Image (cartoon, rainbow, N blue to C red; front, side, top):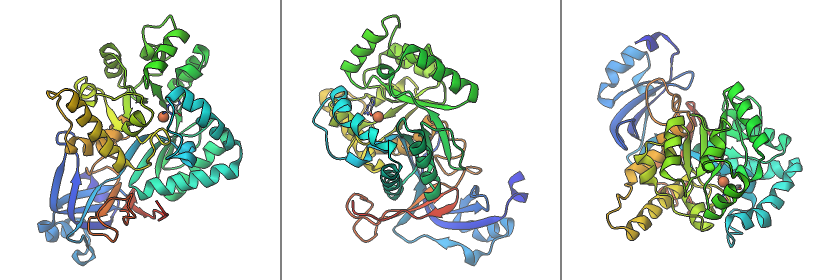
Length: 404
Ligand code: GUN
Ligand code: FE
């Protein structure tokens, strides 16, 4: 292939690889052999039994291959498609109110603190380290309205080796991109939405916001934007629904609205912990997938109390099972499908799957090396588990170990 003459091989790993493909929810390669080039991209994937042939072909020494232990495997880094970095300071508290009251009582006063850069540095450093330790190699962050603090979040993510979309900012680091971030329709005028749509279109930028999280919010949008067909129409008519758009929640979207998502290529960030914690609703993920709308998972800290994507996986299954309790005919999500949503699905939802999401030749080696036999128990990262080793673009990054 044309790759052969490109960059040389920097690392070769032999062992079990688990990932989702475009056709299969979970594919397990036992005794696989994966080569990473000097640019951090996956150069080849083959069988460990072919190590001699592949070492000749790719020019690496067979003894330099890193052999994974019996209890280890590689999986793609997880993608948090919706997380408020600025709300990490009160994660796990203040969940006693519905959304609109919760925003006024807790969220807005806390977010005002980010005019203080040292406050921002402290919280942003902790959230980046913590999510990396929990296996999030890509995060789509809401910051605050403060430009300096938002720039700082981008810098911190890049320094620790995490891929990030950060709103609001325009900055450039190898791993970080800006995302146009109207908070949600109720906090924006039509004029502002129009300008943001224009900025996104003119600069080919990602877009993120919230949509149809609670029924009260949907009714409020109806009052504030009476001339629009739906909540989705408010964003759509301002060019804010594109294939680089991710909208959080969407619990109460109609079939017609989901159709607009499908047509525009916009995606949904499913945030099950938050949806239950704030009593917002239960998103019917199966229905969204049947509409062929892209969907990823989000923690939605601090509406969701956990910054862990493993928690988002568990809550996604819980909500799907709760829907099954209500309707025994419901087509419950499988854990394999949810694994896919946490990895490749999230990467697709953020339009980043050209480079990440699974182990395909030419993509960045963005991976977790998981040891199910690590001190502290299996991969339950919440219980002092040893966290996975994290690789972004082939480079080992060091997730900080802090108290849970
Ligand atoms: N809708 C608008 N802002 C927010 C927020 O900060 N969190 C959640 N969960 N929903 C929102
Ligand atoms: Fe949110």
